[in-house]
Structure formats: C-alpha cells, structure tokens
Length: 186
Image 1 (cartoon, rainbow, N blue to C red):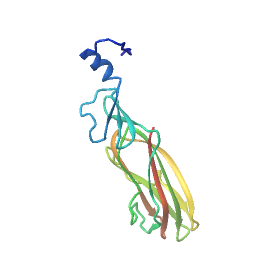
Image 2: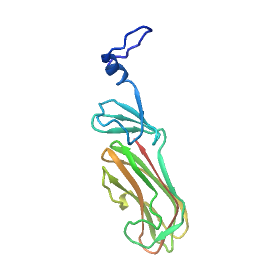
Image 3: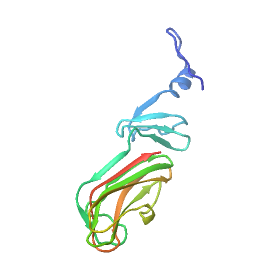
Image 4: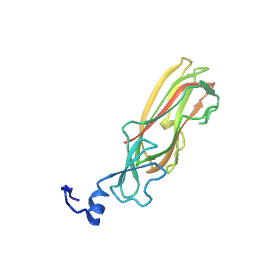
C-alpha cells in the first residue's frame, strides 16, 4: 500500500480513511479492549501492558522495548525430587501475548543442604503447554550458595502464555532466594 500525504483543503474520503488512516495508524487500547476483528498489519499500543503489538494475520506479535520481569525475593526451599512450586509460587509472568518464539531467562541464588543438584526450570501454560524439565533447567550442585542465570529461546504457540518458575532437589534440600524470570519476544 502506498503512503499518502494529505494537503490542506484535501477531502478525506471514506476510502482514504479506510485505506490510509486505519491501516497506517497505531490504535491505543488496553489488552482487554483490543480490536476483536483485526486485519493483517494492524498495530496497537496497549496502555495496560506498555507494549506495541501487531496482528500478522493469525495472531498478535509483541514488540517489546524491554523484557517482562517478575521477582520473588523470599528464601525458600524444597526437598521434592520432581518439579514443584515453593511456598511462594513463581515468579510468574501472566497472560503474556507472544509470537511463536520467546527468550526466557531464569536467575536465582541457589544452594543445597548436601552435595546434591538443585534445579530451577519453567512451565508454560495457555496457548502453549510445556512442563518444567531438566533440559530447560538451571542447575547448581553443592552447598555453597551461588547466583546463577540461564537464557533459552523457546519455540511456542503464539497467543496468551503464562510462564512460571518451578523447582526441585535431586536429594537433600534445595534453597532458592531472589528468584527472577524474564520473558521477551524474539
């Protein structure tokens, strides 16, 4: 579609409004008041999420100026040998509208009561269902508390997704403090 420059005195026709203004404007709304029948190329700014998103013909694609971040500072532990929540669940990034690829970064101070592995992974629910597992886990072995971080790019189903950190101890009691999850569209 061509770009049109309007001059003083030009008549704005319905065709001009539908072709040039509607398809070349950024709509301001909230995630709850997003247009229900978007057309390919429609771009909106969500005031409640502070993000620009564009409809690609099948789903909304987010343009993040920054990743979404959530933190739980509380020091908590688990002796569970399968992925679980801690007493304070998360951190969680809820209802994040994504494209088909995201970068997830998980960070925590981690230690164990013995010379055992402690792991932090992530689950995804919503448009995508992905359980926490060792292939996507941050792992620390030993009793010394270490601040660790890992990033991973994941192919997912575009749409509204929720990302939640999960934890396990291979043996002993794993302790996690200052837990962070960051998610950004890539």
